[in-house]
Image 1: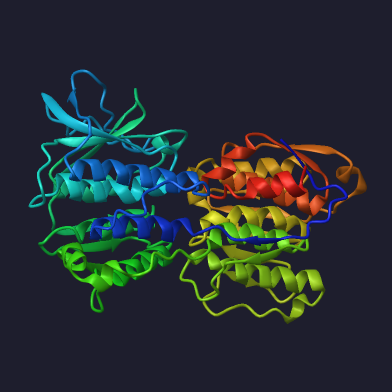
Image 2 (image 1 turned 120 degrees about the vertical axis):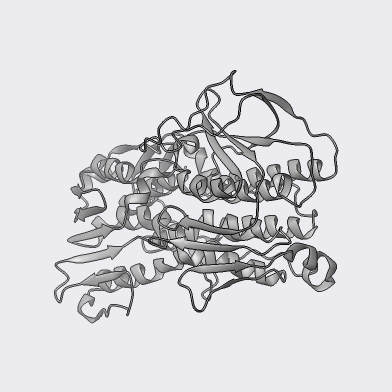
Length: 469
């Protein structure tokens, strides 16, 4: 699709869409408390939210012993892949037992959030020791796109000592989960995905026996675990962080059963604030347009609110008073006196780093983004994707494993008169990056597969149709 920003005045008001992070958590935790009233799929639901609702609808059928299908599975009929992460050799140590197993199936599409949150939750609910027995030996989760190839080893290693085996099946690009989940003391690597930690905190509250979740290694994106704690506490199922032991959490044993019997808990408002991940895209666009952005909570616990720190620096430079910028204590930005060397640590804000990178050459002489390693295992390799998009307009970049340096680009009339091709890599964030480039250059940009933006921001298609065609 051609996005045309040439000779266009972008002057409209737009709401940031609901936060996917909070929406997922509200749906799942309310469901576990016994509230099934929010499972209908709405027209403006992002694709990721649709996947979570679909899985919860499937779980509802299982819990109510109605209309759920099972299949007989034998490990002699399919090649189980014990190599959970393609870049890590785990050896020939498949834990699937011989003989047939009774499984049920859950579709997950391309939603990594759904997969990472729901594997522990489904395991606790239908395979949990001491919880109702639904006659199942396990379940499979179907995936699409790059989701099958993304890392899951950290969750596998955390759950295996507690009775759950997670395997990949290459032929069907699905995840096989078998065993009997037990409460206990879980240890999980915090450097891969905070969603694994959130999934365990939510799941372990379904057991009557106490459990702990110990986070080892670097604890990245901790703000998203804090969001999980906020929603659990809202429904009287708190997961308390230890005051004595570093990064140790105590989920409330039997919390959902208690919450279900306490009317005030289940009557709490189903409320989802605006999404700072997609809001960051809109706020970046705002610097080169006259749009008004609404529905963002300035007191939010969402980590991607960190875009405000970056945009404050952008505003100082664009207004010509860059020497007055003062770095925040413990902030993500560091720089020297003359702003010759600017560094931005993206470790805890990987989702918005691509936006920051694509607007950078229009603001800074040189800036280095660090902590970008996890961008390579998203819906696309977002480091390569950003480099490709910037290269297509002539921007110089230099990459290492964990850093990307972007150099200034001076806009010329020649580039503004061209129709530029910017691939989306089937990645909603990269569609937004391409749109930012079109807005800044005020030119025509050809974006392939633009509709993958529906993964997180389906409403924006209407704005493209109305203002950018």
